[in-house]
Length: 362
Ligand SMILES: Cc1cc2nc3c(=O)[nH]c(=O)nc-3n(C[C@H](O)[C@H](O)[C@H](O)COP(=O)(O)O)c2cc1C
Image 1 (cartoon, protein in one colour):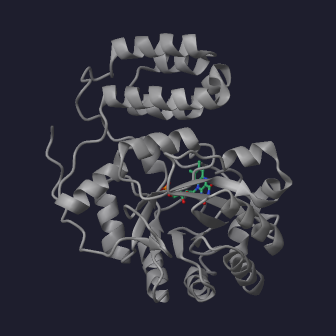
Image 2 (tube, helix red, strand yellow):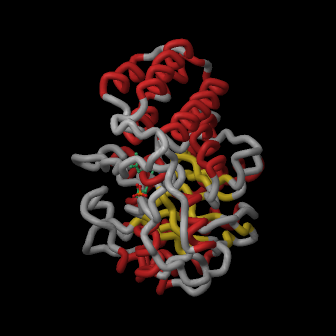
């Protein structure tokens, strides 16, 4: 096993608290629409190290209307704890009712989405467009905070564009109305996913608040990236999205590093195959094997890429339509091993590409 690079342990920080909720680690799973579903959250938790998992963004209006698809996004299980649901919407009463409904179902924390750049969401006055309105945004957040006893957090970007960096202002205001924590993706809405994360911008948000934790987010894929995020911004926790898709072991590595100054390798080929099988099994238990085979294609692609599976076998996986076909292709994948031939060695780092083009999708 290669020796991990020598990255100094982070300076001691108090445990991460969302109001009365003390999280087991400061490394959190960032919401990724289409990926952070219950089966993925479960396997990430089984690998270990994650402090909190949040759902994909959930339409508050759909939730209170009882839309089956929306409600499904909020379903959880005892192993999926602590658990936050991220809601989006532009009307205070809708967001309030959705938050109360979720509190009644035992959700541990509510996250308000103020970062979504997608036109469909921003045009309705929700997501990142909330960063362009002052009073109504603060009112909406206050309404949600006052409506529930569980901690309410906000996830936002640095601002709408480089001329409107409103995150420090909002973080300060949200602290005043009782928000438990703020997560900052260090890009503007205009940037979408382009360019690099602005850690100085995140630091300004950290400096703007007095007590509440600030969660730094963006481009953290390795322990070295996390060390930079903690050092450069002074943030209290880190949320990781695409890095967790590429390497579900990242949270465990970070906790090991924080505790001991060193950390083990990410999952090897065999371990990833085992994780993939388990995740598929959880998906199948929820949706049946045929739907699971289709639903798992997107995520299966990243697993198999990370495992260095040959393209023809990856294509076969994409064509499997039922449990028997999935088992069959996985058996062939297991037999073939990674392209490097090393089943137990460290696999090359995989970087998940950002959504490209105009900001019309995540
Ligand atoms: C495919 C995809 C889906 C996303 N879905 C959400 C979402 O539902 N809610 C949210 O707040 N952010 C969402 N994001 C943004 C991520 O949570 C995160 O802020 C961003 O990807 C930067 O962090 P990362 O570099 O660790 O991925 C999404 C990002 C991607 C790439």
